[in-house]
Length: 332
Image 1 (cartoon, helix red, strand yellow):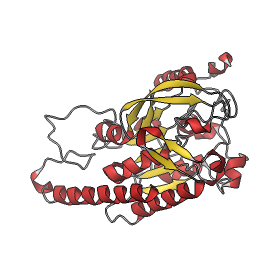
Image 2 (image 1 turned 90 degrees about the horizontal axis):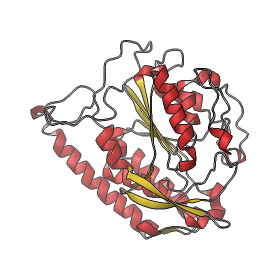
Image 3 (image 1 turned 120 degrees about the horizontal axis):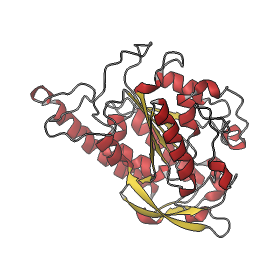
Image 4 (image 1 turned 30 degrees about the vertical axis):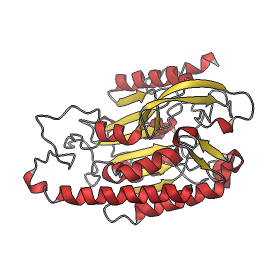
């Protein structure tokens, strides 16, 4: 099954490369609008959510939005040793979100938040209040933070997710589409999901990018960076991002958490909507390595893949930038 999936991805990549080369040959006859680099007729173009965003951060699997807060408010989150057991056992203990964001968007003192747009995907209804609150606080600051109450998949649909009650009840880590991760009775929840490759293509790719007259570091070109922590959903979403061409076409960097060895007890993992099963963490590891190899060896793909997860502030607890306290925890 895993070999068939890899072959399918390769076939779709070959088709995409052929299409890409064909489009390149007619670039001189097309209207190029600054900022997207793609082909489009401005008169027929629909507005995109990403229009006007010099930089884009896609926080996919946002939970309570801590990674986004670290990007917008880095000095409020001093770097400390990541003591999370999973991170330590997987070799990710030294990963720092602040360092990562400096590599992607420039030095903290040079960045301007009004040039960055964040799109936070979070399907868990228990985090709606927190996410809406964060969205409003940042709006008041003049910063663009867009909460998208949905999960991601390889198709637009509604999928049953499960509250598995893992870890701290405020965070409710592990809200997942994988029923096998339930160690006891789990409450089901119907959740809207977007095909992520289509969403990025429709709302981010080929966006209108403004010139920067504020950013101090002029060496940082417009960027699209995505963090993906989707609780086993990566085995469905990432193959589609690769085979559709969107990952290489639209993303500069993907920060991903792959659930393999550290989640070995969760296997076998069945994806009923895709008729697909990963029997062991070893199979998942093979799939991960093959997908990364496909990206790295693709001559027309410049997307950088980074593995990491900074959970040093997983409970947050930092006051909002306008001085108000996070009130969403009072319901727990």
